[in-house]
Image (cartoon, one colour):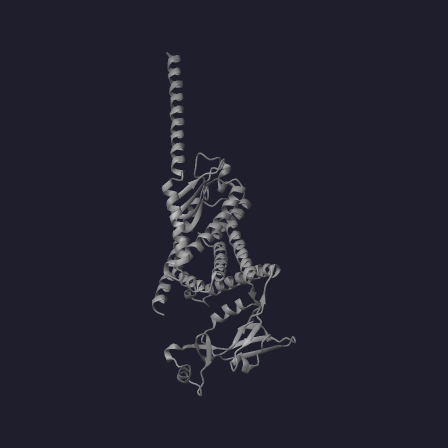
Length: 438
């Protein structure tokens, strides 16, 4: 009796195992079928590519072209960022469920031989993502414990978290090199180029070839720094310049901007003897066609550089200059010296892309490099929901020798995401207001 019962249990166990195996096989077949690139999916993908090409070639300058260009730029930069996380995760043996280009419904999906990661291209060109195992806690009973990110050594988790930012910086340097090597570049250091005749700068005694070493009390070495510092002091009585002459001597000037009007990129000084109305009459245009401006009369040096070595030098020096510019801007935002109006949301970025695209592909590449630096710097900030926020929790773990509760960490990241989302709404609202109230 006992033997028969035991035999029945063995048969039942075998049947259960067979049933479970059959279920796993069916699930695997179903998964493979779902991941096959169907003719319809391939046709949809080709149609999207053709549509993008048509828009970029035949509808340049249009609203839809600017939107598509912006989405492509962001998709490239976000994909590169996620690729950094992906490569480092693979190197350290973290299981990656999926690496996706784009968002929304899957168009194409495949797996490489002996690689468990699902690679997908999705319908909407608005970024991409990695899905890593164990980003905050073990999340799959089928995986070995050493496949989870949360169980990896701290230095490996740190490198994985920072790899996205690193790739954004590398991308920016590569794009800057392409610009400099393909088109050349003008002097980046704060040397004075032409001086507008009869301008306040000419009257003060600044001459071409002088180097500006201080601007409004701040030490400067590049025109990028002068630009951001100038944005802090608008509608002021005067600007302070400390220059170094070609003979090495230094001199400080306090220069008050003069009233000018601009027409067809030419500047005309407004004085009591040469009023705006008189200028309009001389140009045979209406007064409304003249744009008011405050001008000091200093322009950047237009000395040009070309060649491989110069391009390589430009790529690194410009990268560092733009990074310092962004950090300076963030510092001014946190201290209140710059308001939220200095930030741009999707609408503001659309406007910038539209303006930049008018001046050719080199300017679009430059903007992409600048946005790549932005994405890298913002992501490394020690704020929840950013890569830097995850690094903070990793640092807490290293100091306390205890892992922060995944639930607690998730709550902080959710709060950070909500704050960022609300800030985006405010900034976008301001962009829309500015768009319709010029």
